[in-house]
Image 1 (cartoon, one colour):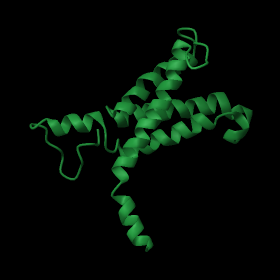
Image 2 (cartoon, one colour):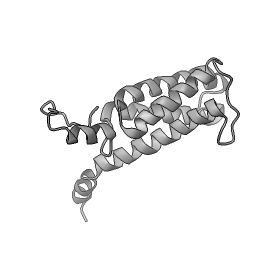
Image 3 (cartoon, one colour):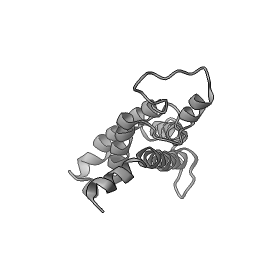
Image 4 (cartoon, rainbow, N blue to C red):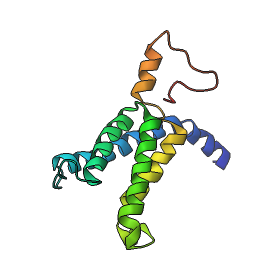
Length: 149
């Protein structure tokens, strides 16, 4: 099988794989927020209003659910990416240059994963795309798919 044929076959699945990536990333991020806010999943809850951890938990839970569902994906992903960059540089960078040295692997991966969603959108399986397709009065901008909420 030639490389061109393989690329063509894989390209047809990009929206679905991007949608699955968004769902998993959102679920993992929301679980981080739930663990921080409610003390579940083997973690103690952060005290209400504790800077920056409690506020990060709110961002993680709310934006994680939005990304998981595919609602306001680009905005939620932008805020999440920025929050993880802030977390990396304020909490981890001081302990070493590389994420494996400073314990910042999760924030670094979340930051770049969410940045990817900012630029590529939610992919398929998004609630906003599903709702838009079901609304006969919704019009999409020419050249821009309805999924790019």
